[in-house]
Amino acid sequence: MLATISGFSRLAILVSILLLTFLAGEHYAEAFSVQTTTAKVENTVNELLQQAPDYDPSPDDDFFRNFRTRVPPRIQYFLRASGVARFVVDTLTWVTAPPAILETQPTALTRFLHLSGLQGSLISKLVANRELESDIMSQDLEPVVTFQRLQYGKDRRQILDLIQCETEDNINENIAIASKRLVLFVHGGAWGSGFPALYRIMASPFLKEKIDVAFLGYRTYPDGNVPDQADDIVASVWKLKQAGLIDSKTDITLMGHSSGSHIATMALLANPEFRQRINSFVPMNGIYDVEKHYLHERTRGVERLSPMAAASVPPTKDSPYGQRSQSLREDWKSQSPTWLLRQPSKSTLLDSFPDTLIIHGQNDITVPMESSIRLWESLQSAANTQENSCRIDLEVLPEVDHVDVVTQIMFGGITRDTVLKWMLESESE
Image 1 (cartoon, rainbow, N blue to C red):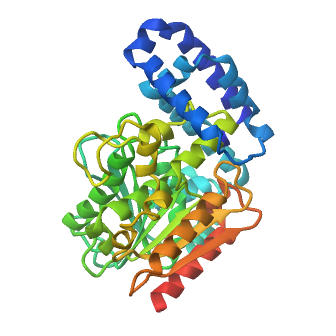
Image 2 (cartoon, rainbow, N blue to C red; image 1 turned 180 degrees about the horizontal axis):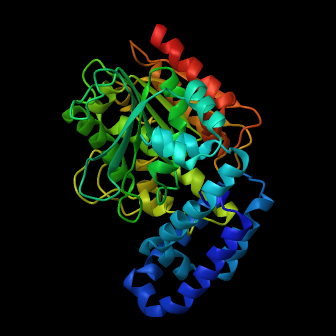
Image 3 (tube, rainbow, N blue to C red; image 1 turned 60 degrees about the vertical axis):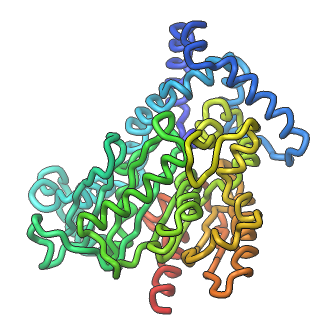
């Protein structure tokens, strides 16, 4: 999200930050142990810089590099740890993203309302161009869909927005009908922001192919770290099963974008039972090596605001991710799929691993495409040790950036064509 903020939004962030800097003071900084955290992280940075690859700074990140230089580190860490940065980013996304989309995609509001189960009379009242409405309903979407929101945990962010193609069997809302095919989408947002509703229009092309779609909401940092977020993905699937919305025959495609691809990969690697339940996996423009990406974030000037470093520290209790170590670098490695896949136990990590299509936009400056290439290499290497290896494909898409992979699935483009072709071919095999 940090990479897509407009100039106006950046100004609003700066004003908000300056105000919060004035209000925070030493008391709040000490309350969040910012000084201790700052020293530990900065020492780790110095170690990493000795082996850092060369990145070409982008002019698009000048705002963040200037902000990083001018605002004290303790304040930057405070904004991240307190959840203030999450509030600012989420609020500005709600304020700026819809108008920006509507400017280039005037049908987006109608699509969104339709996918929210508000078709028919309500849409007719809200949309003046009836011919446009009719065209959308007849060509781009299933004629009728059902929408429902499920709560799978106690936290308000632990929600699932499920959109199903309506059939004669599920017209009665009191009857739960298991999906035959389902895409479970995990949104990005740098581990610390984002919400399912923003991505709802992505359901359109899948519904045309009779594939239902569920958009996952999960605990974002500071309410949850990477292991928590991976656990939320697993819990959401068990909730769908408990509710009768999937069964043993449902073909599930797990799909993620950016940080969502990272936590989805961690969920697959950490939970063998969950792996067995997923039929295919489509991570897009994801981060798979926390150390390497931290250096990239530092070049961009966002590493102190980005929740990645803090969210990638495992819990102290027993978990499939292991105990917290004394080294921040070791903590980060434990949350890095490419590192895990290079370990002696890698063969067990790929037991029942689903067929995978790794997508990355060639023009992505938020997450370099090297990230996906390294994951593909690691998965291929680990898969070669398996008797029944899974299919691992990589598609680097030309002229596609970090956000394009999402908007192209929504409104058409090479990303949509590539993903659908691969999914339909996999189904026929």
